[in-house]
Length: 109
Image 1 (tube, rainbow, N blue to C red):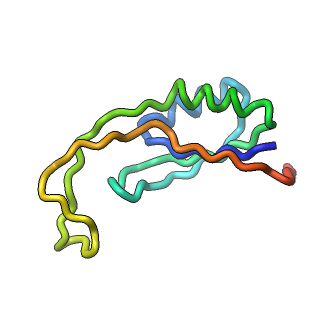
Image 2: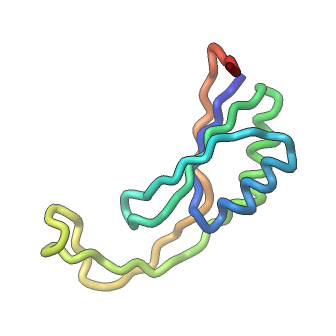
């Protein structure tokens, strides 16, 4: 058994969760925030048999896409200690961060 933990941009969450449900995968959804851009993310914890990992990865690749976005720098006066960049800049966001961990025990109580 595996635990797939994935972090996706909020923009991709609805289509991803609908695809996982349609494929019969159960998950726990947690609202999170990214550290660099401080934008909304969703973290999903998906418990799956070893043989189901490729199907989950396929769904992630199909539903979570990378895109570019203009980031507005933070003012150092408002947020001491943060990296200050004087101009807006373009960053790549989206896609998915995925961790796959072995599960030594699983119980549904």
